[in-house]
Length: 141
Image (cartoon, rainbow, N blue to C red; front, side, top):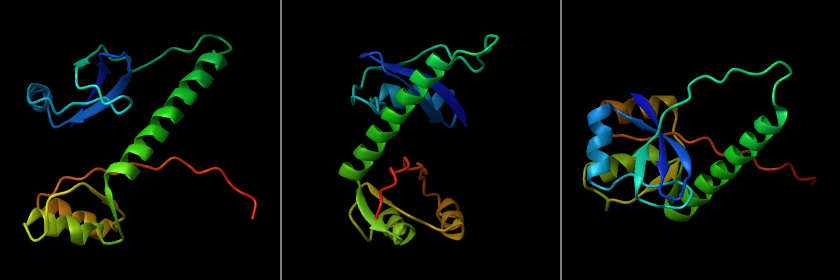
C-alpha cells in the first residue's frame, strides 16, 4: 500500500491509500477519486510532508488549528458514511459476502465485524476499510 497526499480543486488536502502508483492513476483516469470534504472529483497528487520539524517551544497555535481541521474532516466523513451507507450492524461480514456473491444487490454498507470475520472477508477477496468514528461528546445522564 502507498499513501498519497491529494488535493481537490477547492483546495482541500486529504490522504488517499492505493495498492500502488498504477492503482492511483487508474482510479484518477476513471474519475473515482473524490474529495471527502466537498465531493469535488478534480483531484491531484500534491507533495507530501512526511515529517515536520518542531521549533524550539513548538507552535501550539498551528497544532491546534491542524487538530480542529482534522476533527472537522473526521466529522464530515462520519456524516457522509452515516448518510450514504446502509447500517447492517453486526451483520457486516454476512452482508458483504452476500453482495460479493450476488445474493444481495450491490450497495454501500457499514457495520461492525470481528477480527475473524475480517480474515474471512480478506480470504474471499472482499475489500473493505475500517474508519474510526470520531468520539462523541460525553453527556451527563
